[in-house]
Image 1 (cartoon, rainbow, N blue to C red):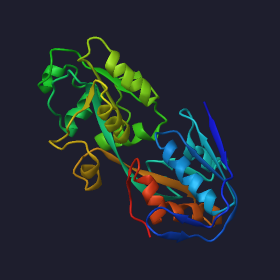
Image 2: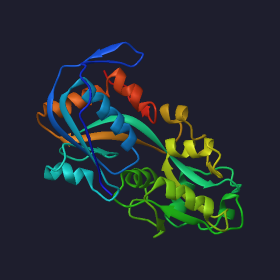
Image 3: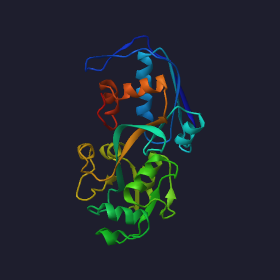
Image 4: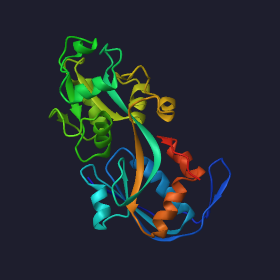
Amino acid sequence: MVARLMFSLGLSLLLSWGMGFVALAEVAGNLIIAGNGPELSTIESLAHAFEKANPQAYLDIVWDGNSRPVEMVKSGQAHIAVTGTEEPGFSATPIAWDGIGVLVHLSNFTKEVTKQQVADIFSGKTTLWSELGGPETKILVIDRPRNQNLRDAFESQLGITGKSTGAKTIASDDQVVKTVVGTLPPLSAVAYLSLNQGLSVVSSGVAVRLLPIDKVEPEVPTVKDGRYPLRRPVLLLSKKGPNTLAEAFTEFVLSPAGRQLIAETYVPINGK
């Protein structure tokens, strides 16, 4: 389902986020931002705040789990793609780090895995949890759609691009969690998702856990300092060349006000 969200709110050119006021030069026009991953709520918040500071700017967010945002920018259907990998010939601005959590059922007593073992699981080389010190159960791999930037980053980080096991593919984070919880036997399923989503469901008491990788716990501080080995950048990708509105939005995203909004879900990358 495509979510087209039009915002035209606010009359002020000043924003206050408890960090002082940020003055922005007013810009005008329409900006289309495309994506397909877990960043939607963050981009919505950023777009809403940007429009409050620029009442003549209209941001159209086009979000579809089956879309190809980079191709949309190439074809002129969008101005900015939210993605996790750079594209030759395009401008890419990193705005945040997102950890990638490896999710299993709470009753799976596998203590930890290495990055290589995660690669072996999702490429089909390792098929039993007992090979990793876990239960005598086959591993049921749950993968994500091929076009999603989360999967692209996950496979690239592990060096298994194009080496999928042909596993069950699920797009929705909520459905991924429900499948891990509901799969019988409950010790078998494994999936990956944005770390923020994973930490949220764990803290809410859902019967799942996130596996430590290379003896590092999956937490915001370990993603921030790079100790946690599975993390991906969140990038704003656009065509090279002048685009005043796209440049203004990117500048806002990297400002203290923008970084504060990003920090609600991800680890912001310092801007100006």
